[in-house]
Length: 235
View 1 (cartoon, one colour):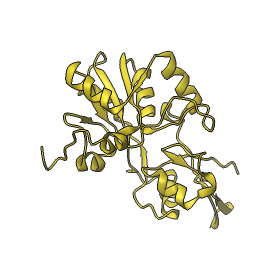
View 2 (cartoon, helix red, strand yellow; view 1 turned 90 degrees about the vertical axis):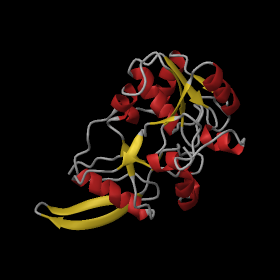
View 3 (cartoon, helix red, strand yellow; view 1 turned 60 degrees about the vertical axis):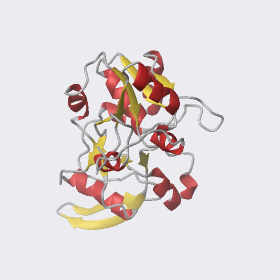
């Protein structure tokens, strides 16, 4: 029997790192991998699913074709650098928004956006709650549940379409998520660190958007620096 694997998306890497501390420094902001072993009878014998430490599910369920968002981070980073996607600090992002008509595209889940976001930011989530109930989706839900996470997420297939309904391809866009990630190499992370906003930036340039920037340090740093923010209840 051929088994397939999938990297599952998380809205809280810090929670997963607390569960699997040995993987700290090897995780990106969106994924982690685990194995669990279970057997269940099928018409062809025993069906095995392996979940070990880290959240890669081994399942006989058919895995959907690889999407651009699932491309290796090295490939994404190379295209972002080739397309000259620049990272800007929060204070610079605020200045560009006020003085140069830049738009902050917040790609966090809708619930996080509603709690607090930069004024006039636009929300299009790059990952959404898992919606379907195929064998593959059930396997992914089980893996999230293994960590006590009962609201697992998946790539939002409507992301580019939804962005296109709000912004044209010449719009000046600063993509933001919680942690931000970075394209800058460090001693421990020579390729930088992937994040939801960098994945979103990759999808945008891949689809012809010409003026894409990235919020370095993410909205965590924006809020920490006490820059303007609003919640939906205030708007």
